[in-house]
Length: 389
Image 1: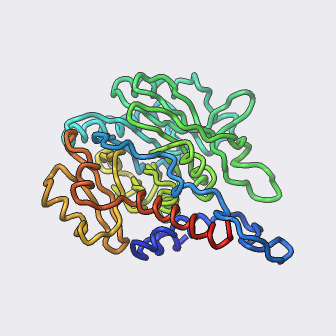
Image 2: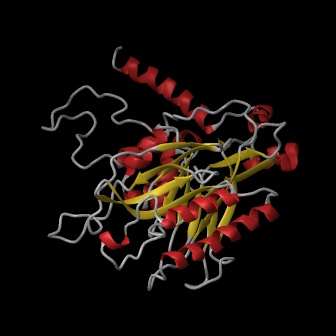
Image 3: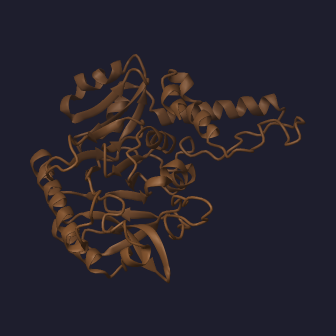
């Protein structure tokens, strides 16, 4: 997956082909090479040879939309060792949520919009599934329903659950009133060691990738080992997900960053170790937390940051001056992170009266989406002419 991070630095015109190269590299093994039959004979090439995600951009920009800020809280919380009991675990996590609530009041003068807790938050992983799994009306879920309501935030609470006589590794989404908006069942649980043909001690793989309409935007969910499988992220993007909450025991950043770039999404990880991150659609880190030890205070293992879903990706342009041209004109009304080594950056407005599109038009440059759309149109005509169509 190093390809994903390297090819993004190829320059303006080279960027047109990045998504094609990366997504093409993710095709299942055994796919026939473009322009060849499985037996090796040549055939007329079709284009594109795969379904596009990032380039097809299922979330067309809302032109001249005002800023859409979202305050996100997540954790890198060490939960190894003896399970303290459900009540104690709930209190332990409540302390983290309460710390998350304090920070945006001071930093952004507002409350939380989304809290993401870690995989297996409510489970004693040393017990068999029948003893650790919770029903959706269990005291653990009721506890966090009350917490979501008190803090007026959406909250993702992961747990092994039992439903319909089966076990699932799930993430339940609570709305601001504490109601269950829905759940996602992990579609790619980890296989148990051979010769077993089970997953994670007997959980049933999920069968769908739901996207939830929240008052701030569209939210998808993935869990831990899902990060190694592109199809879930792709499906969420095709349904218009803007943020994907990713409770996980893996602190992976590189692979998750590739998912963010390929599918133009923000990813929020919530982990047990190493780090918790918010990855932006450039594949770079919008925010990162690295606790200094295993047993730390709530102040040290929570991460709170604000993102803007009405962002624009801008490629390198001499008029942009790596973002400084907009800064000179609009001052603190514009926010951005530009990466010269990647030849692009992410830009947003901090002033509802001056949308980011107004700023881009003033400068007279195209967004990355506009460059890619133009490239596709020109390439489609050129290929059609080459094939005599």
